[in-house]
Each structure stands twice: as structure tokens, then as C-alpha cells.
Length: 77
View (spheres, rainbow, N blue to C red):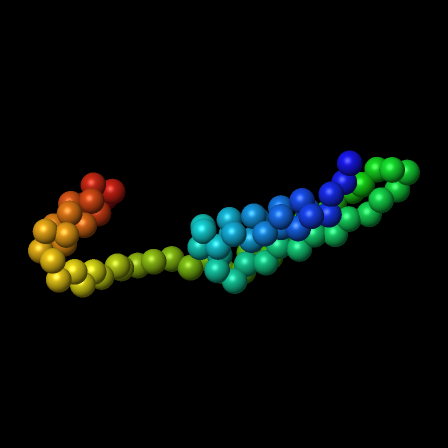
């Protein structure tokens, strides 16, 4: 059974996913058609250009917290 609310939720999830992976201006749209009790859904994704983070600068006044952040970020390198 087709549920238009779930279609809207799917579009929102795809838009969120594009945003999470760096396509901040990306858009997803959906359309559907129904024929003989069969629904066809078409998703159209326009990711636009991805954004890349080059440098992250931290300003942490507490030396202990700054040390924890430094150690945590160096583990990912």
C-alpha cells in the first residue's frame, strides 16, 4: 500500500544524507504515478557541488579539554 507520508519522509532522509556527506545545497524531489493499482516512484537528486573541509581550528581555553581534543583528532589521522 502506497503511503505519501513515507514518500515525503524518504525525500527528507535523502536530503539529510546529501547534507551529511557534504552536499549542503543538494536537493531531492520525488514524483509518483499510479496505474492499475501499481505505483511508480521517481526520485530526482540534484547534489550540486560538494563542500570539503580543509582545516579545523579549535579555541579551547581549558588545557585538559584541549589535550583530549588534540589526542582524539590525531587518532583519526
